[in-house]
Image (cartoon, rainbow, N blue to C red):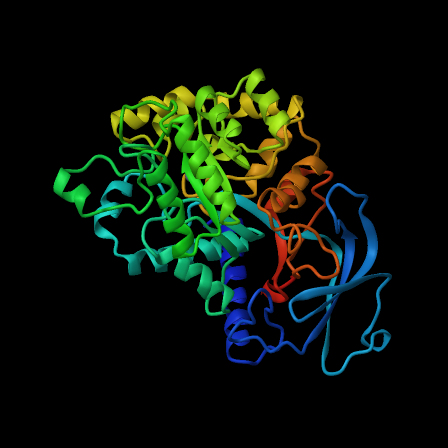
Length: 460
Ligand SMILES: [Zn+2]
């Protein structure tokens, strides 16, 4: 077993032990966000002594700061290392020593699929896994994601009700994981990317999706159905996609009228709306329809980038998966997707280095970029590699860190709660062994994780 794997398993065991201690009331530091969680005992105060503190990515970091945390939230930040006697506190005060660490806000990933891992078993999983299986699997992936330093994620597509149950169980303090913004079923046309493919008709009939719609009225209803189920965000497959088992390409699949109806309905119901889109026409149609963000955008060109700028929409580039599965035909044929069915393999091979080239173009043209990985395509828990991809295409280390903190929070509509370490925000804090401003790969060496005031990885 490689040392890093060994270490992360030890961390995981330590985190689970601490988490169980929280549940049994031994530890009094527990979450308090949105609704008060079942297990919260909001009395403890933590004072975190930081080495370097990057409280707001994009601003200059400070050294030797103290972060005061109470009831799962950040109360204040003071210069120097204060002690319990320096604050007016009733009850226990815990000092957390991160004086030799780089401390920053918990990472945010706007594009994950927690309920599975794409690969040669995906097709069988679709017809063998019950909602209960999915819930337990998704919880395992949620833990891995949290232990990778991600304290908030957005799940952009999951069949059944498991993902809603997982989101609520994490919020209630029943199981460990990041906070999750959930879309439920992706909105897709009949036979579109998020409709299910590759089975006999009677099997397909037994696997209905609540997100399938055709025509503007039907699509308005599909959006309303997701919100009724409890969706926090609306995800739309505006174009074909790579991993659907169909040779229907990656071009526009919803009409302009359908996209407008979807965006207007989502906004009327107070939800952000984001489009999976690959080809230029589909991306631009979604941008013109008023979408808040575009996922992937693989074949966006200069004109598309100008439209991003005009509309103010965010790009969520999802670069790391192509590195994980192979960005050349040789690597692809030896990688985890080597046994994919022919229609999928043809689309995979066409991607090549395009995700990287497109992201470089977007960055050079000042398009707003927020971090998303499409984890579930790449392995869960490896999400932080996306930061490294952004530096590889030309971003500064600081700009890459902003993409996965302040930018992702703003793009996700949650900047009032997360994305920076500021009074009033959730105590979502990670510490790294070294400075990612000097070497971005430091994001892979997370040494402390607090989410909503609960420690999920203790410091070494
Ligand atoms: Zn996806």
